[in-house]
Length: 144
Image 1: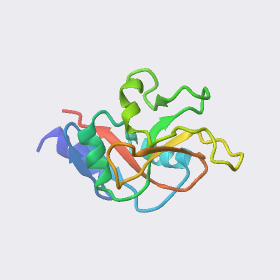
Image 2: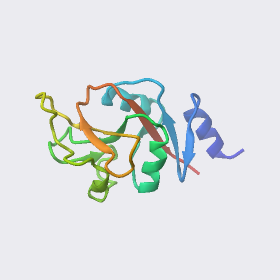
Image 3: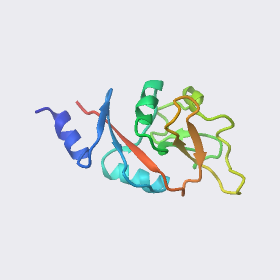
Image 4: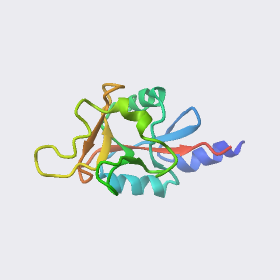
């Protein structure tokens, strides 16, 4: 048995899927962005960072609106992945829905956290209030 199996067993006690070089946990409940992230961190993972159209399609197979690891909570208008400086966001602009990120939704509430809609690959991301309850996806790199 490889170390990969041990990592997946610990991370995937509640069930997960593998894709390319990562394991993914798809939540069964809904939480705020921060509570979702804390759940991922407790599993030794983090909210998903989407690096490609193929990965976006894989995440969409969850068929839920889900938190992803992208926010502008630290600096309004500067979107960063949870790994902060490692993954560029500019290459991912094609995934935003039309007129997103908008910053607010006409209700005077800041929208600083990103979610992904499952029914489209491109134009999938939306900014939302971080306190909104959504499903979430955790990602853990396979450690070989």
